[in-house]
Length: 396
Image 1 (tube, one colour):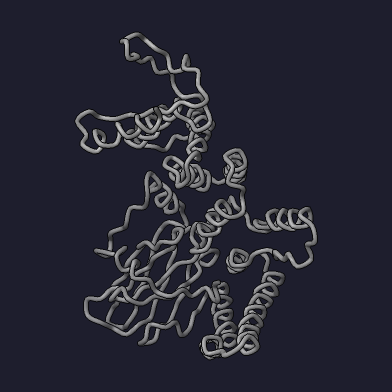
Image 2 (cartoon, rainbow, N blue to C red):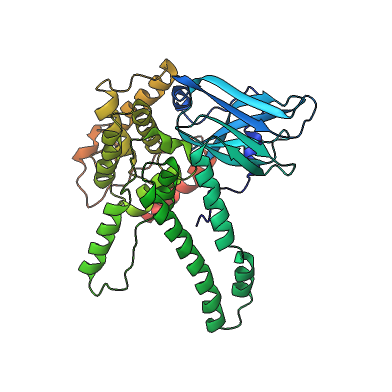
């Protein structure tokens, strides 16, 4: 459960940064998306006021899924100012300003107001922001949640030290009430500011209600679940590329596909095609969804789901809708698809013309038996020489 947008720092973040001008490559053939965010004209200027340190830089980074990447660096001048500037408009999203040691950071919103100024104290905590209404809204939310959860550690201690069910329930009720107040704060904000990027972040943080307490039959349970599923993406524009600049969106897609959509290839293909369809108007999101699901199902975690990769290949690659691959990635994908086409779970296996014990040709499909066991082994394999005779004796 996320209590606020200001995230805890992760060790992996430090590993994403090297030289101030380097950038980490992301997973298979998705690097193009990073570049597509930096190709629009208008520009940005962000001034950060911090204590002067000789030959030191502040860094501007951004979220991409659950990872963080470097975008820009700015030298801290003798007046304690570090100015991030660029000629290209940044895609709206949640960004981070990082300290010279690359150990501390805080979040800022960059969307409709790309020019603003921040004051940072010596503990690298944001003190003041000027020229950005949305960042002021974000800071107001952080202050509100800090107040709501002021006693959170105390409640956790009470919960841990509870000696009976009643004490445990009392402590849990305090935490639940605080969570509810934070949700109400966000809901109220969204109603008043529906077009704010901060509202989009709040919608990503929330989920529709899923309460089975009133379900008395199996049909009731299914109806409640279907309602939950229908509302999971309500008011979240899944074709908006600003979603990629948050740490919540990728996790939400993963949860939807792994926990909410039935793990059946036909059902999953329908849902994936919906994502891609709604992303048609945004080239970056179209590329993202096609690449994301290709990458996931080319070598899936669960047996039999590689048929989804073949679906993507036939629907989007073979129809020339995927035009951004380099030759190496294209060869990898096409070879994988063609190798899979004759080896799909649930489909007839490829014909095997073999020799029987009398050296006569024998077709696999000429074997008439309740079941057929195929054993592939290497006569030079030590384990095979041990195990294959046992298999033979077990089936005599």
